[in-house]
Each structure stands twice: as C-alpha cells, then as structure tokens.
Image (cartoon, rainbow, N blue to C red; front, side, top):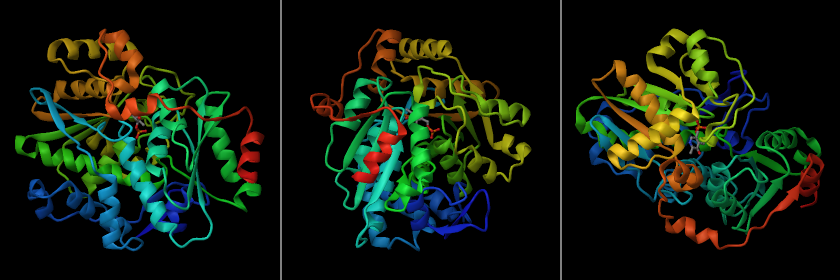
Length: 431
Ligand SMILES: *Cc1c(COP(=O)(O)O)cnc(C)c1O
C-alpha cells in the first residue's frame, strides 16, 4: 500500500517512509491510496474476535508491505494491553472510555503504535531518529510514555512553561532515558512554530533524521480506528443504529472513525463536537474554511484554530459537502454549557465527565434531539483526574488519583528551559 500526499497524489511513499518522514516533501498530509472494506463476516462475528484480532485485520492492508505479520501482532499486543469499555450512563447514551492507558488519555494508542513501528523500522539502521513534538498537554505524556526506552529513537518534547497541568508536566519531564523535555517560555503556538521551523532547517535535517509524532503522522492517526471497532463490538447487540460523538480538536480521532466506517463498520452518523474553536462547525454550515487563532477553554486539548486533519476528512468525501453532511454533523459549545452538563450528568447519573467528554455528550444530545431512534456513544478522551482543577471547581468532588498518575507525582522534574528557536537548534545540532 502506498500513501500519497494530499497536496499532490503523484508524491507517494510506503508506510515506512511515511512514518519516518511524518509529512510529505510538499508539506501535504499522507493518505492511504485505497481503503478496502473488510468482509461482511468480520462485522457479523466481531463479538467473537479478541481486540488484538480485530486490530490486526483492520490495519493489515495499510502496513503489510512494510511490517511482517508476526511483528505486527507483537506491535498490536504492545499497544493494546488495557480495556476500552463502553459504559451506558442512561438509555441510549453510552460513553466509550478511552482513558485506561498508561497516561489516561486516548492518545496512548496512537503514540504506542507509532513508537513500536519506529522501533521496528530503526532496527539495523545506523542513524537514530529524533522525534520532535510540540504539546499543549496530553500528547507529550503519551508520546514520552510510548517511546520510553525504544532503541534508535530519541524524543524531544516542547511544551509551554506554566501552561500545562501539574500532572501533565510530570508525565513528560520525569521519565529520563531517551526523553528530553524543552520548557518553552511562551505559548503552545510558539512551541508548534519552533517544531515546524526545525523541520525546514537543513542545517539540522542534513545531519539528523527528524520526524513528528503529532496526529499528522499516519502511524499515530490510523490506529485510532481500532477503538471505534471495539465500541461497535460492544454495542452491536443493542440492535440500534449507532452514532458516535467525538470531542474534536485536530480532528484526527474522528477522521480515524470515519475510516472505520469506510472499512464497512455499520454506523449511522458521526458528530464532531467542539468547544468555541468552531472552524469546522462553521464550515459545515457555509462551506467556508476559515482558520482562526485558537481560543483558550476548559477543554484545552481541543483549543485548535486550524485543525490539521480536517483535510483528510474532506478528502474521504471527495470534498463534496453535501455527501459529507449525510455522514457528519458538527456543533460547538461554550465553557458554560460544558460545566452545566458536567453538573447535570453528575447529579442525575453519578458519572464524572471530564470537560472534553462533556463536550462530546453535548454534541450527542444535540443530534439525538432529531434522531431519538439511535444508540449514541460519546468518547471520553481523558480521565477526569487529568483536568482536576476544572472537575473540582465544577462538581465539588475530587476524583481519586489512579496509581499510574501517583507514580509520576513524586518524581523529579527535569527540563531544558528555552526562549528562542536558536536555543532549540543549538541543542539539536550539538546533541
Ligand atoms: C487530543 C485530545 C482531543 C482531540 O483529539 P483530536 O484527534 O485532535 O481531534 C480531545 N480530547 C482530549 C482529552 C485530547 O487529549
């Protein structure tokens, strides 16, 4: 299977090349040249398959030219060693909990899968690969954890000083080994800009193999389709049409879900739920894509003003808005309604939503107003403890801190403080 650049389909790469480069030479995102549906039998008997078997069959066509079957099985086993439960919180409304991994956000699956692929590809290579990644919080921890101890791979994470939660900072600054944290005096956009500049800087790239671990990388983006299949496996017996509501920022997660639908998974509809960063909801109303600077909200992992994966969704539907509208709706919600929903769901059902999950819940309710015959699943993308301040303020309860989080809280933070691109460059060149 080849992957082509969305800017120019003549620019093609193998899975391995696409993973190592991150982005195409013309700066386009890579996209699989074809998506062949799985057999009807696969979906009819999905409840008899283990999660590992489901993942193997779903991803095989995309990677099989570059990863031997046995190695793929091992990569999947290393990636998926925790649960993805669908928890019903009321009639026809359930949540798919994606926070049972090591860093308690859904990014663990993509980060681990990519780390394992890069580890596999760098076997026998002389030159190390350096993964450079900017984070506003969750990505850094998941990437650090996924890549820890992977031979031949070094990870440099840039995060904005004072702008990530204490838990998030500990998750990315305390691991050591092949993980380095750069604490940037600035905001997330500054981190992102430095990373993009480094990729274009031949004084660095002539000497170093740099790649990105953001969701533009196909090895981080595609495996996210697994958990839509795991959810389908659990909800199928309800016998109803399924709708997924996905709290969205860069739109990688929801786009992977839409690939699962192209693989033949029966789904009635997708809802992309956003906070006030509403570029996509606006596009779905008027067909105009107008990026903006991001606005800070309580669901900060979704504070994205120019969602990088939305081009992949447009491409999936040949850029035909009318067809896209039949498969996707998108709604935006304020912090105020997010908090009200967290309170309401907690008092009525006892379930503690994190702010991202609450946005997902709101989008689902909006859709179900006019489609009450559906079974709705919203994604809980992070454990409420990762957004402790908001949850405590809003609900007046303190969720118990799980052991994998406790473990890092006592460890010592180690970071390089930098204020300019030059300092990053110096580090990358001399290191
Ligand atoms: C990254 C993230 C999102 C957004 O996912 P995208 O794939 O970027 O749309 C939502 N919630 C949480 C908790 C996240 O960490």
